Length: 358
Image 1 (cartoon, rainbow, N blue to C red):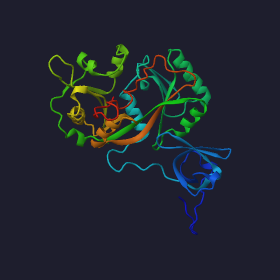
Image 2 (cartoon, rainbow, N blue to C red):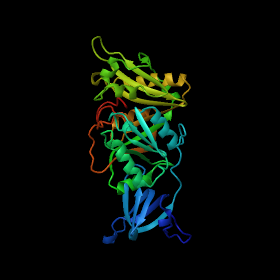
Image 3 (tube, rainbow, N blue to C red):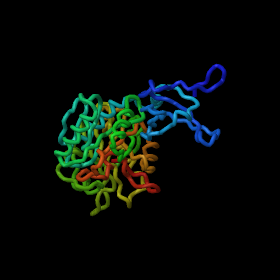
Image 4 (cartoon, helix red, strand yellow):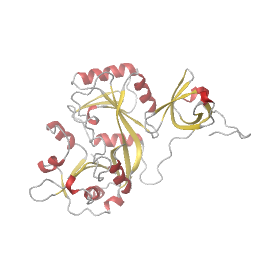
């Protein structure tokens, strides 16, 4: 908090600081006259009618009464990671988009409209990386029309929590009734420590065969889904063979793109869990990516998948930013697959073995 020379807390933020990262302290229950304080750090997205709205790193919007403020100041953007690769949001957004490509796309200014017959939200959502070239309301109308013509609900993929992310746009679309339906995180880490792990017994292929697809826990694996799975600069599929007559014990997917290796679709046979197979699959894919010149890794993991988060934390990965899928108001998903494990870490639920990401 900002403290004056006299030792007093001061409020050094105002409505002119909308769009900046701030740290504020307020009385927890001003009406009751209590002495408890709460601190909030995030992007100030609005200050109107005596009310502040601050968007935290995870996308949560916090409403604060101006009358409850006791201190506040503008603070620098979230510090860069002190270990592992350095990366901007824009670079990671583009790399992750190239690793999971739609079958149809169209530009609206600097917004990319993507469609893949409803196979995963990420391949059926707008990726806004700049100005749409028109007022926001007009852009959203154009987005609705584009997806309606394909009998798909309209989704926006927006990010929070890093320098250059989209807290203001999140607030603007939320104010227009768009619903945040899915939140996940993109994690990054150094590749060498993962590639140095044991990856024996893993078979690598450029294509996903019937056995691999049989282990992949997704619905509606038609021609479009296969195109999405096979998209990317340099795609590798990993398989750990199971017992004779059984499906694979574990699978995974990796896309190598310059210095980046993106990991996804790590699935383990429930009967084979707690044997380290997920780590083995990721290690084998990391070695392949390292041999192709990659030095950094990324993956997406759901915020509530404790198992996958523990696994990737042990491998040296950590969160870079959160991303969210906002759905147009009044239009629930129809054809879009509501199971978003291809957008984020899948694996088992809480209390189970940490076996994967997809």
